Length: 398
Image (cartoon, rainbow, N blue to C red):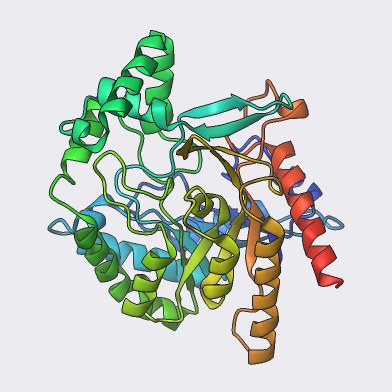
């Protein structure tokens, strides 16, 4: 496997020199400064690539190998008139990346919001901090802060009462923080930040769209992208919806193994693949990650190796657990990924290695009190990478 590390560019508190010290060989990055829908030019790609790969003689080189992500414009998801220009720009960005040697691209098709959490500093018994999604807080936001039209129909009477109690117990500052956490844009998100009114307007634009229509728009997008990806030798790796379920009245379409079966039956191109985000998929109890790793092995081009611990009393709530101490068997997942790499080697696959990276590490030790990107502090991710590396070495030696 190729050990990689996500880097958000020159403003990332974790520097390239520090990434080098983790032992990772590859970098996962994106051109975050380019507006959604605009073309990533070859010059801009080469400039960013040089920041990652140029180093002094004697230092271990790093390689920008994976893009996470080229954002998909909202007009494509909505199939608005004129959206074809944004598909053309996405394809041109992809081809420019391929010309620069970067041929693994993670992307998602989540409407309006990207991955979201209610708590960015949930204290663990160890004293470290983790990201958390609290369903009760989310319902309080939806019902009593956002006041989304028809939201009540999506909750039980008990959930509505409980959400009101949670809302009443929050201070005004806590309500503002919750709102910002959900809609203002987390680091790593590839969607825009919103004000509350803009957010309501964006949600309203999807009021007549169900999962079938959104899936049709994804397939239409991919039907144009995949032939060009094949011609350029690019592997696309769709990221699951996070959390993987409908929310805020928005349809979600990449949540389960069944969703992936539908995707690959419709579009069997060898360039059509997935990011196996273990934590995202495992936040649903009906997803069996070792089984999915085996079932979709040939389609896995990239993997986020993290796990979550779900609330036993409310399975929609979870926090980001340590990489080896979660609700899923990470060792079994890694074993299946290694088996897939062995299968590729025997069958002469054009892509032998699976890129992996630690994801959403805890804020801990010397990073506590520092300015960090939530979920992307240095020490917690290095701990996760070291743990996963140990599993890989041990399994590989058997």
